[in-house]
Amino acid sequence: MHEASVKDITVLGSTGSIGLSTVDVVERHPEDFRLVALTANQDVDTLFDQCLRLRPAYAAMADERSAETLARRLKAAGSQTEVDSGVAGLERMASLPEVDAVMAAIVGAAGLMPALAAVRAGKRVLLANKEALVMSGELFIDEVRAHGAELLPIDSEHNAVFQCLPPDFGCGLRAVGVDRILLTASGGPFRQLSADQLERVTPEQACAHPNWEMGRKISVDSATLMNKGLEVIEACWLFGAAPDQVEVIIHPQSIVHSLVSYTDGSVLDQLGNPDMRTPIAHALGWPRRIESGVRTLDLVEVAHLAFEAPDESRFPCLRLARQALEAGGTASATLNAANEEAVRSFLEQEIGFMQIPETIEYTLRQADIVAARDLDTVLAADRQARALAGEFLRRCRGHA
Image 1 (cartoon, rainbow, N blue to C red):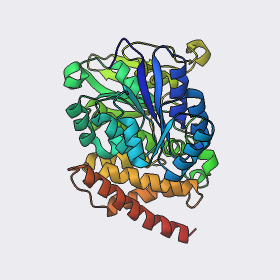
Image 2: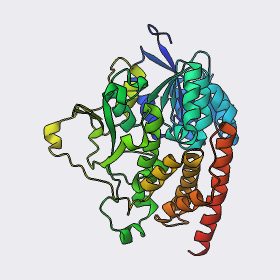
Image 3: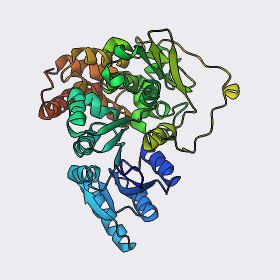
Image 4: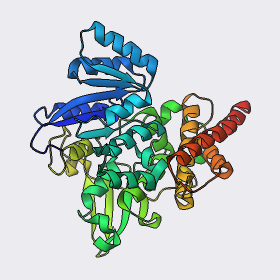
């Protein structure tokens, strides 16, 4: 990377919540960063507005028809932005020779291949797409090492852990005196609901997160605690942690973003207001600290910080994620695919909230869990899991 010059940035998923926050931080530092490429799935209007305002050299849309519409509108507006499309287009944006850093913020399994393209091009990868590591785990980390890429976590929890670890943690957590990693979870909007009440919650209620502004899919994952389960898996790969070294603790205020416990009895944590611009600014500027636009935390105003253990009987997704992590191989890819299918069905009001974990559990029982030898094996597991989840969901809809 060109340390003394402007950093050229690609934002994969620039129209989503992380993408919008990234653009906000970048715009605060025009002397440090330049947006070279922006991508989206189908949100033509937002990407069109971004292209006119930010004037990136390139834009890409996963959906080809949406890309055609964007290209037409940009040409009519006199824009010079070049438009690409499909997965190949996203991968090209992630691996442009002039790009220094790539924000990988595409939601779900769709973000795996573009994130891998950035890794294989040796970029600094700001990883907000946890599914990439959940699905491919060791394969992804091996690619990072093989191509000399730099992987910086964007999830607020993993970014907090990164900030609390010593620089040489890569030689092994126990070697640097780390005992445990504690990931905090807000508990979502249903933390205090009974099992009976959970049966009746709606997509609108699930998407109304008490602390964070997030997309609909990740909001549902937060409500089921699957988001935290995926983060446990991600933490193991990011930090070389054993499954029993990563714990989850409910912290409703979302002020303490995660903690690292050391063998000498010390516990380090990172605090801040719940705003994703903090970890984004940290990763963009690392190892420098840059202004993010986030209000400074006032502990007197916060006054009270609470912590409690998660209830896996009411929120079984956390247990299912640990089960997949311990099973190894393609189990985590299976878990992720089944969850994506179930959440989509819930958001479309086809199934109830508690049928999300039921779908995942069924899929994990029925799927062929094999060693994740290569990417083709992982993608085959993803396809099989979606087919199995689809069978279960059709039965659920038939009994609705």
